[in-house]
Image (cartoon, rainbow, N blue to C red; front, side, top):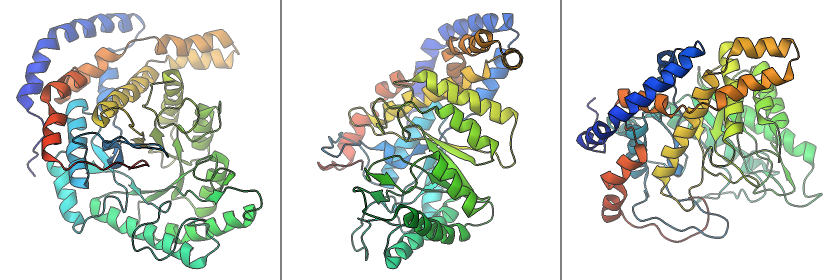
Length: 431
């Protein structure tokens, strides 16, 4: 199938031509620095070129809080427009080739056609996300007091059927993962039996699990709070791994960087989930106070690096079936979503590249000798390296933009789409 990219390749080529000499100089300089450490910069670049992260369809639009949403002119209102914007992100970054859709938000009548449409833009589909945390028009039973864990059997069955429908949609789109997050929980002590609600969740989730095709995975996402502020049914990684173990080998745990209690050691969670073969994937974002869904790397890039340090350890020592699904999951309340996801994709790729630079031999030797400072310095030396020339060179060689944000702004994409697309109405919420 012929691929028709949204931005002018001539514009990107012209943009790159003005910056190529400087990049080649920076890359050569960094290469000499790394060579003194015994690191081949081209080998690192090759691994960076093979790295990718999915973008969420809903992330292409402006987000909001419980109080307000401030629309952006030209933001997408349909899955077709979302795919266009996601294609822009990948064309410039060359690191986001997959889109993770959400249903029923992205529902269409022809999924084979939607798959072809994505392919024509150089994209494919990632994990399918179900929605049993909102009531939809015409829905028979409310999720106000729960979905897969509801005390109402009819409501639980409705949630099960929706997830199975998502699996079928995903099969048509070429996906192989179903992400299940439920907002189920309580807002008052005594509202529900805490043990019984988990039992109901497991019984309903087992029906969804049984519908998974061969080669599929069910990714269980935990969340400490919101919308349930007293208790959540799947509230932490412990609840998630217990549920995944109960459901079976196709069930894995999905780690969202914002869905943890304050100061939790997320990189240790990565190591533990991998140890038991239950690390299914990541939703990348950043957090200052709670589940803020801020841009990846905007608050704590060092934590992102430490997470990738554990992921590289896991790659080097894989458990059976280790193949984590990576996705950006953010709420872009005040920025152009394309710019935020370009920035985040670079931050995520940078954390990956820095983790590749860790001298594993020195690190493991220091750990074995209980040499605390040298073990820490093995990580710190890698973290301090400016890997942007590696990322930019990998983008350039793949046809992307050296300066992604500069090329995007010069292309005038948002202004053009503001003239073509219908405006988004005022409202609250993330979509």
